[in-house]
Length: 53
Image (tube, rainbow, N blue to C red; front, side, top):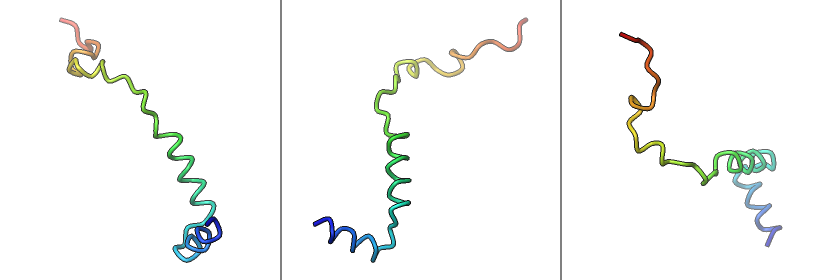
């Protein structure tokens, strides 16, 4: 089965370097542990005040 997969990748033009790059990108951007609770407050309320009166 792996041999068939490698032949298909050769026909489709997917190189091992591209496959490694895709795996690295998935590892970086596939973080599912993002805390979105802070996003319930509007951004304008979360920012520090720049101008004081």
